Length: 256
Image (cartoon, rainbow, N blue to C red; front, side):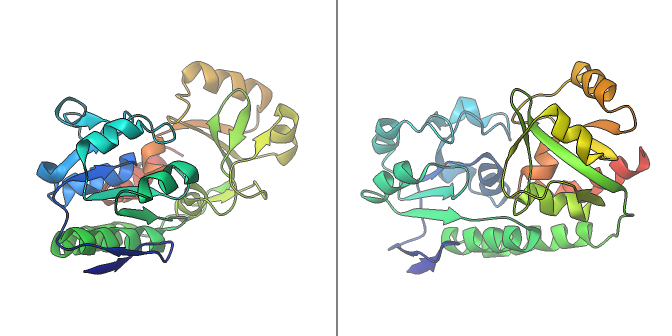
């Protein structure tokens, strides 16, 4: 069987995979939700949903610091990764020995394409299609525009979500205009934040775990800005968590 991943690469399998390793938390959750828990043999230390996985599966390192020997020991027939979250050189080394399917997601449509593609290569197309339909139903409900916003993913240094990221695409859908013109994840100084005059400053729960003390700090330097703690999983996870994301953003709108 031949499959095409989101980088346009061909993957050949004799049968649907029975030993799968996932290198990305949001895609790990998706694999479980399409019914592949019993075929999932390895996950990263950041694969926290569902919580039982870290006790029942082999931990193969972090998304960017993979334990290659652990992966070899598991002898997977399919490894599932992501262009942005996994290091290219490590993926290349894995490809020398295993079938590797890579996603590349920067907006909602690409997220649905990823879900469909994983459904195809794992033989779970029916369930994957159901998840896509649920996501579409949730994201069909319009949200009001809120205003100019900046989304922080790290504190020291200050790192923000820029253009061309999945986070920026979700911000737009949720009604926030991303004030960051740079692409990907640029570093900002406090003065640069102040000069952009955001109406909203969104402090993510991951990868840096912003807290209420951070809200107070940034509120002091941005007194005219709404500073909010937000759930980073709903802004950045592009798998089946999107089924619940629509409800989260509607509740977030109610707080404004």
